[in-house]
Image 1 (cartoon, helix red, strand yellow):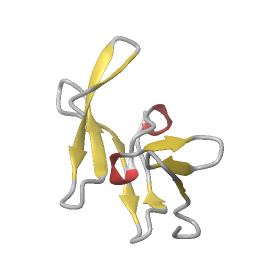
Image 2 (tube, one colour; image 1 turned 90 degrees about the horizontal axis):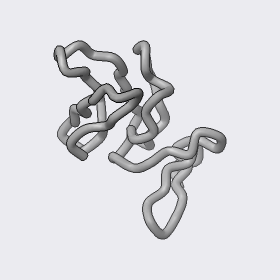
Image 3 (cartoon, helix red, strand yellow; image 1 turned 180 degrees about the horizontal axis):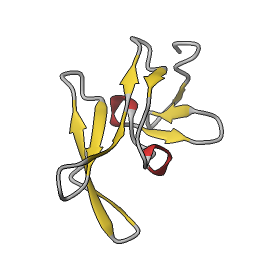
Length: 83
């Protein structure tokens, strides 16, 4: 994923060594959202002004906001249950 457009403003994701999105930055390199995860993908820390704006976080998969499940193409993943 190269960039995410929200309200005509581009935001760029930053990744850790496991491919998880850890930060989103704007065009001025200011961090607008940050995420930290436990080993199963539960969000431990998620501060930032635009944290709820973005749907791609853990393992660069899309998160369903109502159920907090991640979609892996053929299955849904629940970080709370680790499966």
